[in-house]
Image 1: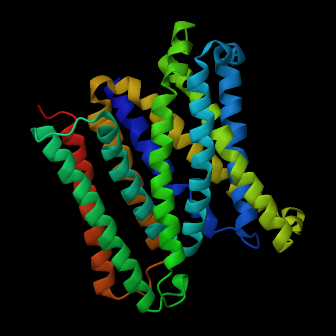
Image 2: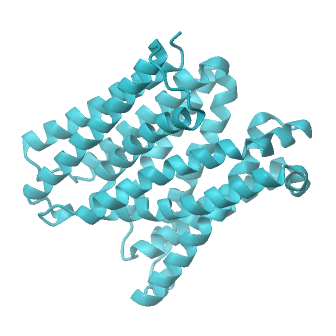
Length: 334
């Protein structure tokens, strides 16, 4: 069972690292066309279809769940929706490789540190020291990767127009912060899953009901923003332009990959038992980070960058992987 859980965690990381790649391969469509189809697929259709098939009385589950937990899921999910917009825009401006690296690094650092802040469990035991070292490595890695991105601009890489795209960096920062907000909301919404388990559902199926609420609420700002952009840019007609099938397919694929990464990790965690926090999370994170950067290089986002710039980026990625290891060890250190 552990081997199957590790396999699911690996696939989760691969899906997470791959899902933004189609954005660079879709012809003609503008950002708002791609993102609207992606959001509807990943945040509405896929979660609702899965829960409707596996938890047929999910409406009763929500009615019996604590009202506060349901409210937290909706509120924090809605707030996360703005972070999803930030992330999508940062990919458009910085590229698959750099945007994913910055956001994964920032969200991981905050995701490791925020629970400690909220619980007030600061200290200098071995596990605390390892966690602090991991967070420091995350932030250092993000800083170095950001430096590599700025160097790439100076190397006249066409993807960033030959200069520092500060808007892209600010969007990535916002996306990283809002990812931590999503994790906080998920923690506060866990009583919903407990209600599902009391009704006889497995932990995995009960947890999926939380995703329906959070992702559904998060889809609202994304849909509104995409519709407004489409009206302003007059890009609605692109949905039905000549030969739109490839664009539809790739945009839907984005939603399937991202949604798949969440549900695969949800399936992996119970199979790993006590190993879940120490193996599943860092494994998925590391694989996602490496996959996103591999696709960035295959998409030739760094083809005009100098060797020193590429070495700087690889150094930053290496530090992020070290950070993953430290944070994983902190969950098992005595």
